[in-house]
Amino acid sequence: MQVTQDKVVQIDYTLTDAKGTVIDSSKGRPLAYLHGARGIIPGLEKELEGKSAGDHLQVVVPPEQAYGLHDDSLLIYVPRKAFGKRKIEKGMRFELTAEHGTQAVTVVSLQRETVRVDANHVLAGQTLYFDVKIVSVRDATPDELSHGHAHGAGGHHHP
Image 1 (tube, helix red, strand yellow):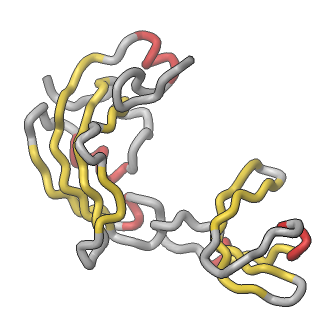
Image 2 (image 1 turned 30 degrees about the vertical axis):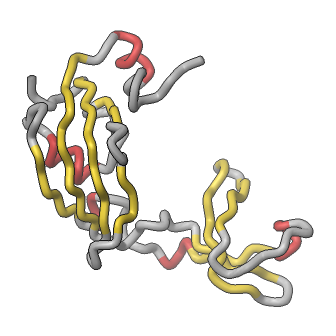
């Protein structure tokens, strides 16, 4: 069976940066996703299209097909008081609540009254290198299709 729209695909993967540093890995616990439901980055999903269980791929995904280019407009100043009494250091990650929902941010610099944060995804602007093995491909269940994601081992579990 081939990887196509509405198939549940399980992959073992290792993700590295341009220097070969491991960023993430399935560590032998395959990741399950619903193909075509935007559960993985577009560039990787595109490369898996038409492949089959047992296929092994080396995939290079440019930023535009991953987490996007780094957007300087997402470097913002937040009043220090928004962090309460917490000790804040450069590099710390927080979730801030704004009008449009919760946003993960990274502290870039500290000033007396403000904290400069970066709301870009931590991998924005990076080319990503995947070593991927397709473990299995199956038809999605009606529940998976209606929920828009894979269920069961390696996928999303509902209580």
